[in-house]
Length: 345
Length: 108
Image (cartoon, rainbow over all chains, first blue to last red; front, top):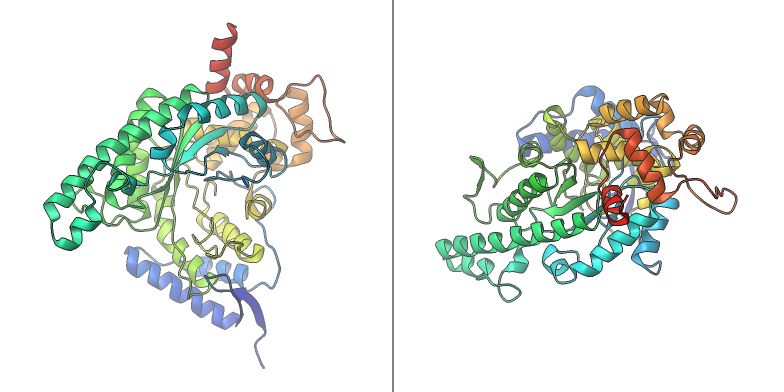
């Protein structure tokens, strides 16, 4: 008998058809690859069956069970098309029912925000008078902005291909000093304006130094603001060793996978950790979900703080295109909640 | 995509008790189960009630914790926004940063 083919998606968002057997093969291959790369166990048989049921359904939309909903945080959020930041936040609270709101600026880097801090502080103060839900302030560390020609440090991405390793490392270390100072400066300013917390989004995007400069800032912010929310969301599943020798309290950062990333984040004082697993565009979403769940699952066993896997465009099983299909996004959300038992998204 | 995730897996923000559970995660770093149980205990409801918009609208109204406002659902005279956050801080036993700033600036 011919197996029924169900519509599903590839990591680039394109629609394809797969049989249940083909989807099972994708899921088994995805978890095997995740386990091999992250050196962790693959998903167990029950988890694979559950994931297959989620992806083999032809439903246009899926959702978690009643009562099993989780807290939604966001990096960015809203549309920036509704007039003002304040209206955007109100819409996110009143229409979308977001659990944690985020004020952000289109120049989504701490270095850029430093130059317009009073404007952002005023928006935060006004927003706090108008909204009930918690509002955090978010931006990205973007360490590369501290290298020439944008910043003061030598450009290590130019020095590295020339084999000038010691100079590259010195440049990275100089950039980190500037970066941490900016992260703390902006955070202090936003907390003084009434923010409920800070979000460091896409941490590690410029490698181990990007992560270390953020961890140092988190530690300082936690000391100054003991009850601040601090969300540390990652750029990818694996910390790239741009410097290569940087450590956090004796642990080398380069090469860390989500479990180790979580451990250093919670030790530094973060209250929410957001693992990110980048999509493989040429693999199916089922393959990608299996891969992502496999490498994030070890976090759940050691987490003392909430874990909110990133399910934005191109991460943790959500396709990488601008308008990810609702079928694919909702399946990724359900898979994270029901298989990882995560604390939020 | 925001709408997709809100409908597929989100607690519902101030439509339910999503904002209250979120505050416990943010400020205290509580995992989801612990945060839900804490909030349910403070509200005197079940954990399942926390993401039920019907149950929570009643409860939020009774306790003055702020609700969604639209043309068919207006509550003039009831606490919203900052006023509601004063009550949320007391209910959850939290120090909410903007409430403290407001108190300080208003000389309360």
